[in-house]
Amino acid sequence: MAAQFGRRLRKGAATTAVAAVAVAALSASQAPGVNDHGRQTAADATPSPEASASDGSATGNSPYYTDLPPLKSPNPSPSTGPGPGGTGATEAGIPATVLDAYKKAETALREAKPGCNLPWQLLAAIGRVESGQARGGRVDADGTTIKKILGPQLDGNGFALIKDTDDGAYDGNSSYDQAVGPMQFIPSTWAWAGRDGNGDGKKDPNNIYDAALAAGHYLCRNDWDLSQQGDLDRAILSYNNSREYLNLVMRWLEFYRKGTHEVPDGAGTLPDNRSDDGANPTPTVPGATTPAGSTPRPGPKPEKPATPQKPGGGGTTTPKPPTTPPGTPSTPPATTPTPTDTVDHLEDAGTAKLTAMAGDAFSKRISTRAETEAGKAVAKVRVRFTIVGDTDTTFTGGESVATVATNSSGVAVAPALRAGEKTGAVTVRATVVGRAVPGLDYKATVTERAADTLARTGDAALTCAPGGEFANQVEVKATYNGAVADGVAATATLITSADDATANDKGPYFKDADGKTVRTLSGLKTDAKGLLKLPKLYADDTTGTFLLRITTAGGATLTVELTVAAAETSSPSASPSASASPSA
Image (cartoon, rainbow, N blue to C red; front, side, top):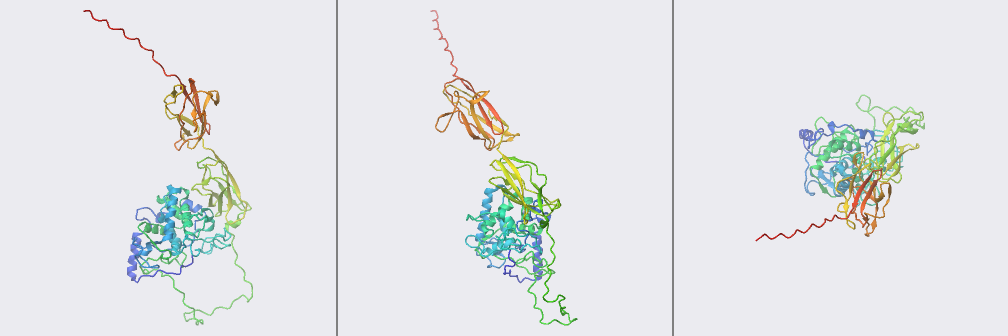
């Protein structure tokens, strides 16, 4: 986020009394505790365990813009209201390209993670607070900001301390990280959360389409459902772990939900106040002056007098001469090592065997401990877990990288893994963010989907006349530990006998695509309900009882009897004798 946008909101000429009434109305209509839908918001919210256990936030808890939305949420036509930089109706306007990016991200997330229920208005609220909608929509035709939007360097001087993680690739700073782009991602988060939202083959945090899609995926991780207030709070806090930030984003979210409209790119209103400005100046209420008793925003500093005033005159005193002789090198201030600086190595913290069936979540999680050379645990160290190699296994939420801070015991617990469809070994590598110490590899195993039980879904007899077609198809249901076993590989074979599982050379058969006789079907799979319906069966001229055996991955087996018999023919009944004619 740039230090200042250079444009200030024009304050109304209302009296102090009117301003006080406006602020009171704002407090009543936008109380932190309850929003317009009666849902709990930030007043009762606390940072979630997920938020506090992560690497801090998407933004590194960088400063943000604190301007509040107007008391009313107008929904005028784009031509209504004052021009750029004004207040009122245009506060609801969002630059065209920026608005398009938010809506496209919502559409993409609706398909990729439908259970998240991400509203585009949430992206708009965060984009407003983080960068004033990409500096009022100052983007090119592809959605890339005209100039880079950078937050202050996170050097621990009033901000978090995050040493460089990208060698300056995104923020141009090879010493410390800075939040980048319209959604203000720090480089270490963008490294795993970045997305290509405009289809140009690049993941650029300075592009609003890329940044909005990345923000959507970030907010939808951990299986959060943003239609639930608790998950919505957790998601927002994970973006910037501040109760005040949560309050503010919720207010803009409700504002945009009540109505917004498109304005031309570059014509959006620009925010005025930032969370790191001075001594927490009062947020601007559009259309009102500074309330009575509040601290006005600091203006330009007055020029210093050319000569110091005499003592006792109420001015400054004559400065004392320096005690250090000219030319003496100054001694740099002593620096205190950060927790990350003290890490010597990573140790496994009792991770159990990691095994899961394809498509299932791993029941165990990876635990890693950061230690000093002496073996002492180190807290507040960011550990990055990366799934490496050719695999579709991910962390819950679909990400392949997760960064977690160590707790007071020096332990970082990775998010739960979810197995993909590719079976075999999976490697998860733990490394220390900002420190070149050897990584620690964990092995996980993905096994194929399996079933332990097969049962027919019906009990009708399977019979057929020689040379005919069986009236009923065979359908079975597969389960594993009593639960539906979907996507399980199966094979069906018309076997020779109960003791001989080789394919029979006579009796019932299936037909392939060319109509040829086959007695073994492979490559079968159960459907989403664990059901498997076999193709039609036919019979040759051989009569008798035959066996169909179905087997699945995991060892489930079912043997079904098939009967081929000639249709019963009834013996002809004796012809009735002619009735005797009655005697005359």
